[in-house]
Length: 299
Image 1: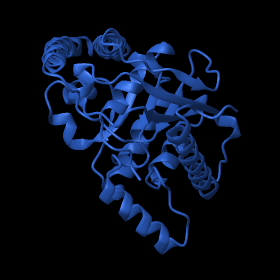
Image 2: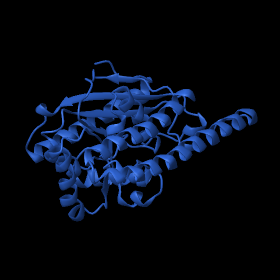
Image 3: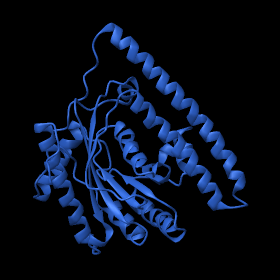
């Protein structure tokens, strides 16, 4: 079953102190975000001169804001130990992850910053988000990938945008929650029912992965990517809300990463779908071990 939510902190004094921390964190990040949006709009004036220059400017702007978010989490005491494969620097990669909360995004900031690629993040996000001032507007300038959740409408546009990354050799760290949504008890139950209807084994801690977008991404970017990073996010004391993260209620999030070179992934689409499904079953076993023992298994 999905992990329970993080319990609220107790104690009036502690609550007041952490609420003040949360207000500071939100005030700083939201104010900076609006400034970053303004700088991004100004950067568009450089489009007639050089599209590459605009990308460089926005890489710095996006990286600055995301780094600020992660540094605040670090200063608030959020420990994110990263275990698993040894990761080379300067790789173009696709990062896939399980999805439990909005704070999964904050957790992955730490990994991208460790690898020096935080300005190159390209998220797969719902199309409606691009209309939201701040985060949504910023993602437009950063070439993030907006999806309408209608495969017929998304497929051609998605392939065209991804192919452009390869054609123009744009540095990329594309991140995808391939379950398609955050896990919730009712969604997990629906995933179990679907697995039973298909005659396959269900997953205990995850939703079944959606394979179409993953396969299309690999097909469009295969000549541009170096590897796929399979990341597993394990919350230690329960799944936090974004507000709890901003307050500093979260003490530790464990992150496990497995690196798979693109050259080792199958080319055939059906085989690639099976490859992803196997990874998700392995991820489910990883989480079972982690929730039982409090650590990742040693390979």
